[in-house]
Amino acid sequence: MNYSMVKSLILKDWYFHRRAILLSLAGGVVSLGIVALGGKAGFFIGLVFLISIIITIAATLVMNTLVGERENQTLAFVMSLPISYLEYTTAKILGNLLIFVPFWLTLVAGSLALIVAAPVIHGLFAFTAIMAVEILVSTCLMIAVALVTESKGWTISAMIAGNLAINVVGYIVAHIPGIANGMWGKAIQWSPAASISLATEFALIALLLGGALFIQSRKREFI
Amino acid sequence: MNDLSVHFDGVGKRYPHFSLENIHLELPTGSIMGFIGANGAGKSTTIRILMGLVHQDEGSVRVLGHSMPAEQAAAKLDIGFVSEDMRLYGQATLAWHMDFLRPIYPRWDQSYAEELARRFDLKLQQKIKGLSHGQRVKAALLLALARSPRLLVLDEPTTGLDPVARVEVLDELMAVLADEDRTILFSSHNTLDVEQISDQITFIDRGRIIDSDDKEAFLDRWRRLRLVLPPDGVVPRLPGVVEVGGSSRLPVLTTNRYEPVMVSVCNDLGATVQAVDSMTLEEIFVANVHSRRERLTA
Image 1 (cartoon, rainbow over the protein chains, first blue to last red):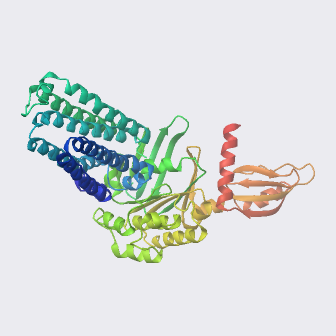
Image 2: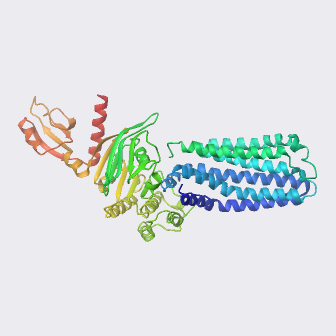
Image 3: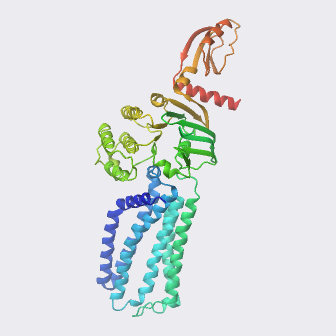
């Protein structure tokens, strides 16, 4: 594996998205502020802003760094570099994760910190953590589909499916007894059901990205 | 084998509506090969196989001593590649692209890159999206040449360029030919461009290589013989005739195995040779393609 080439491609993608990421991060922090200080209405408005910002930046990253590379015909330039397609795939997966995860983690950590700091909503801690990772699952689904299909249509379909899945998963998680019971309580409750939910989500992430790598390694045409 | 920069041996690639079959191609180090074919003939597919971007279904490919596609990363370290459908990053400047490539290529020549930018009248701080098509091609060529590649692969680089930009690009290519160790594969459907810079020519049509030779040999062995036949005279049987045109009294024979002795042979057979016309590369290419297609449909 040519790690220096992988690093160069990751830094390239960061360079082209650094402003959008930093602006979105600022927007996310403002949303957290609205959640914290806006009362009951502010809580919901801020939350919607926050989730929208995270999902939008994930979609923007995936569309630009994966689908855009083909659509804008820069893939031929990238593939003329001393790199194999597996290294390209690795760079794209790692790049998307390394650019997105710190941004996502910062806002998730902020959200969890708010829950812990607020006097009455501690019970939402487990639910919020599971739903935050679900957004990461949805992002990884987009990454995998975009990598394998290189198609805008399929990637948008994956984005819609991922967003729908967030709602469905939210409903299911909110009705799992081990999680639902303490959800509106004043104390943080971390149940085995919460651990299993998180482990399932991380397993899904590994499956999606591992599957994308596997399929990419068997491709015979790259341009 | 060591003096071959590119060696295709029995390479094939099948698609549902097109196939590349039994491609044998040898590109000696230091040579400049013009790779000519109509649109859809298989030039780009062949070049993509050469670059490791498409895997062949059969046959072997070696580029600069590396087996492709397995060793493509090592091979591409010494290849400069420009294709008609390659784009640079529109939101970045040419300077950014140079900074991006410099650490990747150990033989990157920054002063040459800057000199080329001056010669091509390119501004380093201008964003690529603000450049004209001709300037973008020149920028891509600059980035390929400054890598100091041992092999330069140019896939239709002059397509869509205005005449001035085309001449500038071709002039620069002529200048880099001074380096005798550099090998160039130049694909185009524009035979004029290819004729200017190539010393070897390969024709490809419908996924098959139909002829390959030195440029001078091509130009020497292809001729049009304009004959005048006596009444009831027959067209003399000459070697290598691929096309018989004109009228029954004034036939025009196109041969790919011309020898000066043919003139006296014709005279001996009662036909008067009115003229022996040299052919341009374009005429040779078209005649070659037509004769092959006629043979296939016969």
